[in-house]
Image 1 (cartoon, one colour):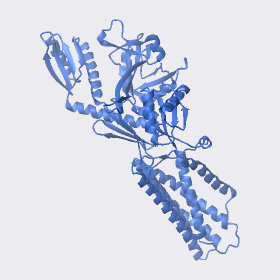
Image 2 (cartoon, rainbow, N blue to C red):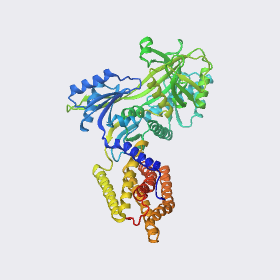
Image 3 (cartoon, rainbow, N blue to C red):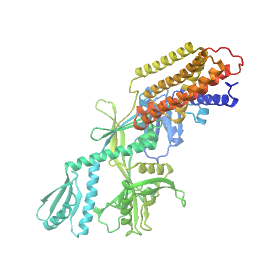
Image 4 (cartoon, one colour):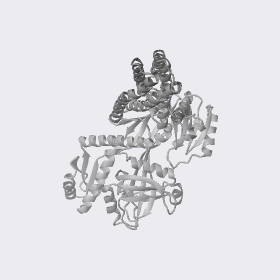
Length: 625
């Protein structure tokens, strides 16, 4: 009677194993190769008409496809073979133009009834299934130009404050600041005033005739190197934040050379979204609207971003002087305007940004302030080379558009909102980009490709074969050495692997080759627990205990040793996850989950089977162990 489980425990074990079986099933359905079409901007709408257009283009190009699906602002095209992915992507990109992103994808084939229950396959790491590889180039020259423009604006403010007149103060194509004055005395006064404030600039003087006196300010080599290093470092941090916003597991974001960054995203399902969010250099500039008497050289005209406003107003003139940029945004969230029910972005500035905004708007109440949305984009065009082959040509360009031009009702501070956005998707995307951090310099895609297993398909097959062989040998050993109890251990071991796969699928964990090693170690840990239990039962039988007492004592007395060993290993796995990166974390995650599932199957699972077979036998004389 002491080796009988209550009914609820049997039902619990059966329920857990049934759920494990259901949630591990999605891993049996291989995904379809596919391409996904989405807008270059979150405001671009993808509808049924676009889906029909894609189907027509595919038919005309003679590209075989399985089906097309209209998703949330995207069209997914399922293909029968991986070989057709690159051809379909190239043809569609050429036909649709630069306003759309055509990206390679893997479309899940999990049945709807499993999806409705939350079932999804495990993500596979780069070393097992590959992923997306981006190589981006940071435009460090733009970062230097931006710094010089800010310095030139600061110099203008300083000279105006001291009433020193200048003919022009601007940044040349060689990224040097050039100040022009009518007299030598004014130039020398200005030079004496600004030279001490900018120790990172090298100043020189020159003359152009008798009526123009010039000074030039060029960044020193050390200052240029510092700006370039800062731009690359800031972009690395921002990219990591954006990848985290995307929820990608075990990404690789690292520096390559002096001005390039590698981004690798394993297991990504929506590569189009990843490319749009990661590659976009979105920033904001806040400028006052130019007044009627503003000099032509001090103002610039920009179009509206909204198609409706562009048709009604065309554009608007803003002052060249920038109040502040998106670099000062501490937080950004999207919501809806309660009065108009239109999408908006709620902005919170940092301390310096709030001070600058208040200083600029307190004396400008009644004037209008424009919010300029700036994007650095890459346009891909197909051209025919001398050999008559179609080649991709990438062209970098900048879009500057007004998303809001509103009257300043009162002095603004750290918190305010941006309206004038066309859709909730655009508002959400802008908030994400600002929240993740502004890029210190524009970036452009140099290379985009999908990458296969880093260790090669042959090595992966060999590794999986070794796991199967090792598992088979363990099962055979347990069966031969422990007989009936070996059958109990083997069934629990298979249930353990099933539960491990199910839990990893539910958590969305990424399986890597080191993760498979973690599964192998988990199998060893589970067998080790059964060996301790069965050895204890044998000792009890040799000591003269009855079979029922030996079974009871074996499980009860071995429990402490099993718990101690597993907790120690679990602590090591947690430490590995905390201090490790990439593959090490993959190993730690698999090992941690495996330890928890093996504790359940090795102790409760095998004991339930032993109780079921031997528990009701009152006059049990012998057990096969």
